[in-house]
Length: 361
Ligand code: SAH
Image (cartoon, rainbow, N blue to C red; front, side, top):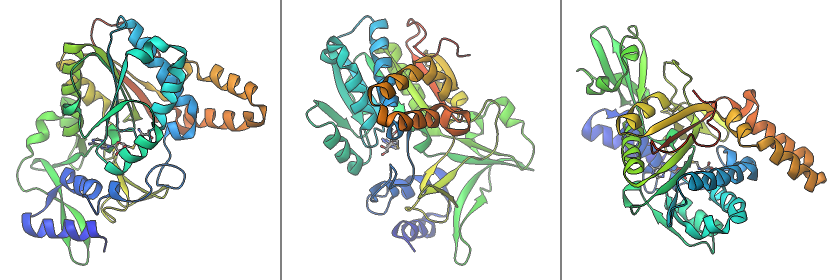
């Protein structure tokens, strides 16, 4: 049994069944045994490959998105350029390279990276060597000021809770441990307070339905929205999201590029859930921010000019043309990452529609 599994087993013996969000937090973040303390997470040798690791075009276009937002904000100096969950630092390195065409933007930008994993923060420091930047364990540590925020595959990593509609009403699904059966879900005996966070349509789902909520994502939406409304700026989130009206559980475990049982190997598999952008937007709007999207990643990147960028790269290095076109397809084709992944922005309400969202609902 893994360290994380025996740690969780002991915790359940002491406290009783755990909320799924507690189980996820321990499985991902236990300082020694957690998934993020482990060796290789991202990249071809790790458990999954993210868009910035597929092609430099992704980070470059996001860098130009930041420049355009900064212009729309009236070119504040300084500008806090923030990234949440920067992974290996690839997105930010590519974004800054693309922004070199605008030295005035780079001179104004002050880099802040929010990263909870010390191991990944070390990789980011190495990747961004020579670039002045500050690292923070959470958003609350970032100084005040007008800001532009980027976050790719960050929200899906935040812990969730699951509720199930029983004949007696909504109950939280808790994680229990049984020798022989291992970790398994049971229903809490009493009503679930988080029911109040479900939309009326979700609440009306039939007996047996499972709903997911991320209290951490909802609280981030409020905090960030308040920050952008008070101090100015905008934020771009890209992640795999629920489709409009899609219901049911999406919790998944990924281990070496393959699906695994979510409760079976804590500490050894990445645990994620599809992002509920509708719930995220409700919380951000309540705090006064304007919301744009979600729109499909394919449509968003196409609007930012990824096809033209790919053709220019292919023409500049013909021996790499096939590889460039292959990564373009991976990022934008609907059967690859183009439609499951979605882009969503929140911004100060006085700002114009952010680039790429002109045709968004
Ligand atoms: N954006 C990167 C990495 C995505 S993986 C990419 O696209 O390649 C998720 C990232 O978020 C990792 O860097 C992880 O360590 C970080 N992370 C996850 N939960 C976090 C939290 N609660 N606070 C800060 N960082 C977190």
